[in-house]
Image (cartoon, rainbow, N blue to C red; front, side, top):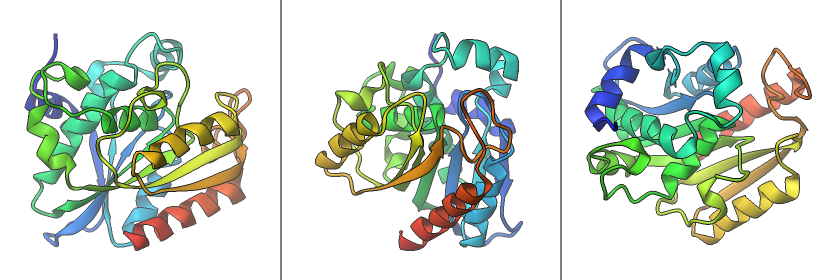
Amino acid sequence: MTDTVQQRWARLEPHVTAYGPVDGVVRPAVILFHGCGGLRPHLPMYAQAAVEAGWRAFIVDSYAPRGWDRNMSLTLVCTGVLLRGPERAGDVAATVWGIAQRPDVDAGKLVLAGWSHGSWSMMDLMTMRLDRSGEAGLADPQTARAALDGVVGLGLYYPYVGPGALSRTRPWVRHPQTLAVIARDDHLTSVGNARNVHDRVARDGTPVEVWIANGTHAFDEPTGMGPMQHDPELTQESLRRLGAFLGRI
């Protein structure tokens, strides 16, 4: 069963963490979407980088509203059994709609940042016109369409671009400025495959800035696992680049 944009946002909103001054000043906002492993300690560092650049930041937990813990997410989401990109795209759309209504947010200047699965969901959303019921797992995706006009930038951190990623075959219908971070030693994709997808997006008319980081998938996550190795220096460079990207928007 699909839910409405308002219903999806009502489920997500209690699990959104806000960063930035507690005041009524209208500021642009960055909305952060975690990877398949759920909330991890590197996301607040990026949120703080956004705040230091003069933006508000909001970290969205897609798992808590569904009652999922990390073990379940690693077992079923990271393996592609549950919550694939097209479905989680509804979380992205509903969150944009909800955050855009805040009186302390500039709804015309929103940036979405996603890590791996989060970027997959964001990129899939960019391919959707949101003009028919059921898109992004939403009964009324049209409700969120106008809010997405305020998305002026994307930060794509080592996104999943393998089989099932819609951007491999479908053009984007929205073209925000994009920072695409490719991990040179990503075990989920080759640099060539990732470049092909980002080049395809650029041909659709999206301005894409690519940074090939000399690290593994999740190089910025303080706790490595398996082939994923944390690189503190590369993490600091990634944070710096986010601040610079926000400064150019």
